[in-house]
Image 1 (tube, rainbow, N blue to C red):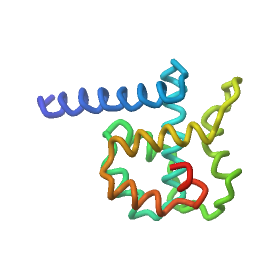
Image 2: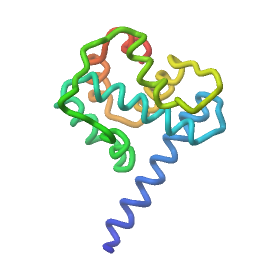
Image 3: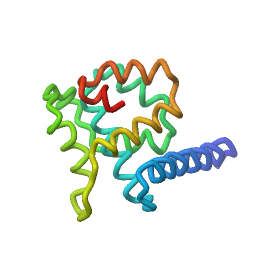
Image 4: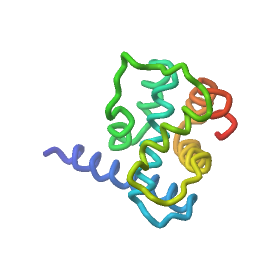
Length: 141
């Protein structure tokens, strides 16, 4: 295996762990598994509601490992989803926590992941994605 590949793997694992730590800290959970569910749920929420070109541009800025989470279970024939009601939007995040029995503050989860994206991605891309989202999600961002 080439050194470049080994470096890429190490870097993407490190970056992904950093993102998960930040989400975990923002939400006060102390549970990296929950942070992973939060990241996946919000990324899928975004991916499924923005135009394909914007989804691809966002993907290009994600760490390689996070990019895999982003595209996981994607069905291009069902996107973009046009139902933009708050209940439907937040339901997508809640789906990630089906087996979790604690109470969840879904808007806080969205805000934490949006904050991490804002910290780590190019501002122009964050702004483009934010503008493509429903108004309620823009307000959380």
